Image (tube, rainbow, N blue to C red; front, side, top):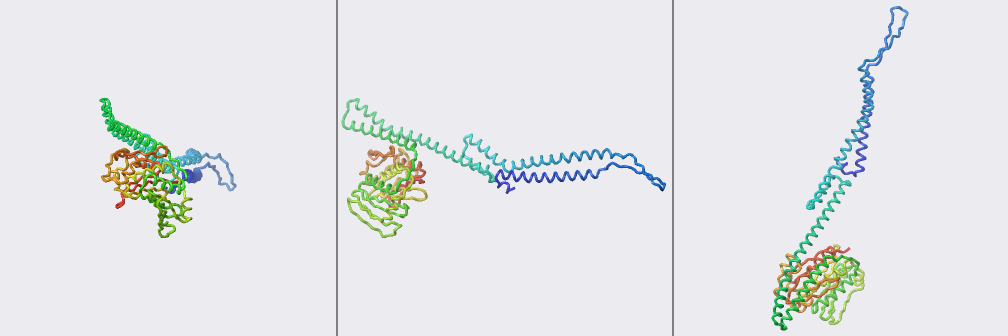
Length: 455
């Protein structure tokens, strides 16, 4: 019956009915012929002829004798069976064919669908819907049910994670506000006692600003969770220029290197920009395979590339949400510039239907706690024991928070950091079908890589 299970429902029903009716027809013909032969073997009506001894023959026609009663009864019964048995045979064959079709094609998938529906109605999604042995429409329906279950499970898990994250955010927000509120209450008591010096007023202003920043951070998270992803074609050349401008603004005094991999026909295009005085160098492209060419002119940007390479970059485009991409770029560059010593490396690459943005600095690297647990909002990650010179210079650039796709800078207070930048990047990457990875490069520093799903 394996070939029946592999057939579609309509074809299987037609095949089973065809063979069933063919069998019923053969049986009916056999029954009809058999009944006729039995009838012929029964005693028939007889007539007697008397012959005298006289040479002259005298024929007498007596009355015909009727057949025996039992013979008439059997003959009548056989006549009825000739009509009734074919009808009975066809009825039984149709019933048997229908039962066989149900048990072979319908029983298993219907049982699977019924039990799966009952479990889903009970909010039980932690199971796998088995696939029936056949390959018909009901098997495809079971497969569709399994995909629906997986989607519902993923959505429920997402909602559960969001609810848990919201609870954790609220708890962390309330906990982090406790100290500023306590300080403000103490300051208010001092003011009531008439102690109103410059230090008291300064403390009042500082902690009021800190509470305002906390509230803005919470609002930014809510906007990030609700903002839709609106993809459109963006030229890679535009992304490159914006990354260069962002590095110039957020990483002053650092030697920034921007590389592009897998863009158009160009294997690699690396541009180094020392943003203290716009010092640009062009490194060989893998597609051209030429020797490295380095050109430096402080205070003036010079980019030398072949026309074909430039055209490849200018014509290449990717489908991403431009605003969300730049928000992630600004966060990662600002975070890297905060701890970089001398150099910041920014990479842009297309690989496996993802647009990869990487930022690597030569600072002390990410703390082990951050690498283990990932970025958390308002996370109390232990600060680095050694801060770089750039960390002190770029305090104003330590945090960028999304606000209608435009970054707003939040200054750190005494090295305090809300931990919102990397968390915002992670949230945006997940919404864009990608992810955010953090790692420490041995001998170099920290590296953050943001993946964006492109279409």
